[in-house]
Image (cartoon, rainbow, N blue to C red; front, side, top):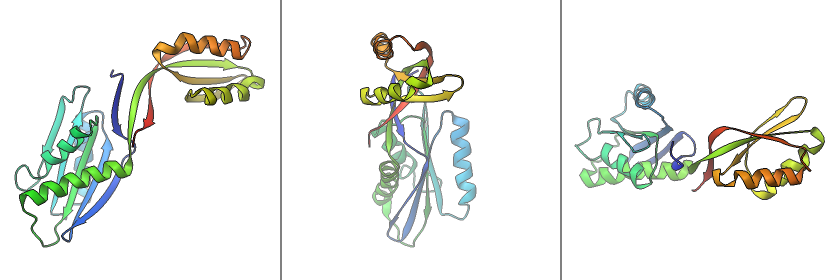
Length: 211
């Protein structure tokens, strides 16, 4: 697993209009080729009457799964430029489709490259980009009487909570950097006067906005 990487914050759509042509960009996170291809197919089915549904995806820790499709536009003017935007932004595990409804004005090869590139770039900016970083999950179990103080202290120290469970006690799962585990456990023990049980439950990605 990668220690950290960039991807889109949320799935969604964004539209731009160039010379009366509508360019509707749809984008999702995708972890494998099957889900990416299913997404592309679904967008094509939804927009069956569009002039073109051009697509690209970039998957895998080493970007080992990548594909671009011009869907009838002149070769190299749509899919590859879309893919290049994803690469330039250093995004991973992303699939994108730009649907074009032709407005009657031909853009030429250069105009098409700019249009499809801009559609993807603007969509990424509009929806946002996050950094996903791998962290250790420390499960902290404590009494209800200590819960509020502990949670407030976590927030002030900048620790992010991955999840909370309420049973006979409160269990907080906390993201902790791998090189900070010992310091975190010492800090939590001192804060609660030893009234907290802690154990590692695995690793999980946490997300931080970068744009």
